[in-house]
Length: 274
Ligand SMILES: Nc1ncnc2c1ncn2[C@@H]1O[C@H](COP(=O)(O)OP(=O)(O)OP(=O)(O)O)[C@@H](O)[C@H]1O
Image (cartoon, rainbow, N blue to C red; front, side):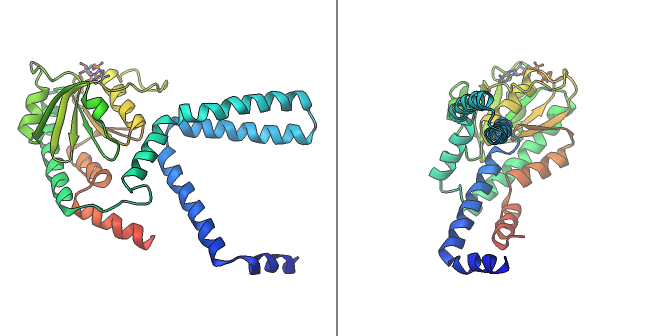
């Protein structure tokens, strides 16, 4: 038996190893894309179906096997529909050359993001104290132009004062979401898709549902200040982190979106593979 094993290993060439490594890396990136999304449930469902199909085939249960095959066909047709947001994100990342890693991140952009995080933190503190409801979306790789189109374009440099002003109850743009790109407020009063998650707390109304919804359809990060409680929350990849204080919010933002320090750390972290 050992001979057989060593025989197989002796036939493996460097090209085979590169091929396997590339496929593994591709699967790893795909898993990162669909982690925590609805797509993962569909994949699990298809896997269960596949196992049931193999078992029914081995046991020669012809009718059930035929039925499972038909269901499997429908499941495969459903893939591009259910995976549409993930496929879009993957293709966009591929187009920007970032699918295989972080890409080149200019320190200028890092400075802009650091400044933005400071202004956002400052404004959120004020909004929380005064219990002014707010919904802020931070654009990452996925373009949010379709969301921006639903609101009023601003394209103004970010400042805490401007952010607070926009969310003041009598401001014409206080309803809806504000979209940020680097150090620019792109638009206010934007409409976001609502999440369809069934098991969210009853106290979470449409503001929180919209904040989660946009992170399921893109790689954006959204921040919420509750009008009712003043609680600060952050949504990313369909998940909501609630009751943050402003320091926790800042750490989250640095980790997920980054200033220079965190980005250069993650760059070396990735390169060294620790
Ligand atoms: N689809 C949407 N896109 C963007 N903003 C939305 C959307 N739906 C609701 N909002 C915003 O949320 C506000 C309503 O919040 P609602 O009270 O229903 O939510 P909530 O999650 O309970 O928030 P809060 O804790 O602040 O009350 C609206 O006035 C609007 O500003």
